[in-house]
Image (cartoon, rainbow, N blue to C red; front, side):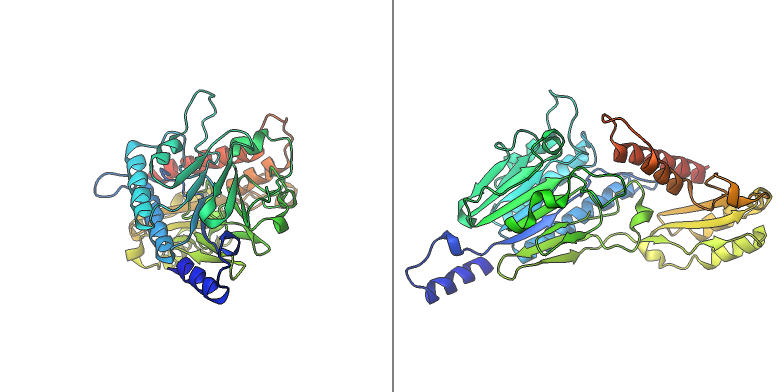
Length: 403
């Protein structure tokens, strides 16, 4: 509707001067949906992992919100799936959701660029994303050279240049310039920009030369972040990072870009709440006092079934053993997941100790600091080592909580 109105007004004001050069384009940009993501042990009535179900539902609601705005072009900038081989159930759910979405919008262009999570590392292994090319209007870019990863959309007078994970890792050119043959030039990349995370990154934003592009859609970083009015990470649509606690307080959603108005708009979505409760500093507290303080902080809306973490610092070993964990678990049963962490205190001088527990930081925080300062060879990807360690720590915490 919007595009038709713009075209009509332009033809009325400038009769006889039609053509694609004055086309206005609207873009919806989503990323890092991580379909197939699983966490914790809770299941839904069908026996399915509840977080896996949550993430699929968030994807559907995001597509619905985008359909209501009726964009000319939709971009997914990577990590559509959480793993190379998602379950059949997730593949079918994703295919149906995208098929319905494309039918609603008349099969207009939907571009998907492969991210690191769904990119197979075996040369002869095919990408699951190619299945979606059977849906009319869907264009998938998962590997190949720069020349292979371009698509022209004549109706929009636009050209999309795609840089999936494999191309970003293999490309030695280092700069990304628009072809310049169309009015609207759009760059889609999946990778971590330097400066976003300490001591990590595969490219500098300046290498993309943002001023020369109509829009730059970035994927991989799960928190919305912008550079100017035409370049951004959309962020993830749900809490699917290895360490979701780093993202507490940040909104999840997608981005709207309008070439007529200029600038971009972040559109927040709705997810299951993630709550990091205020820390309890327990150096002078006994087990009963710690239990009572933690119980007092269990005050969320039970209908929301949130994901919750409670950290208690400076806990003596004998005090921890006396904490009433059974009462805490019972009180927190309305949460989808209640993570209770204690950080012990030691009797000797803490200022000279290098132990993460003694310094008052979590093992997760200490691991990130360690990886950030560690020296690796060129064949080792720092962020993947970091994420693997965080995932193992999370699994260990889950196992401890279950026990």
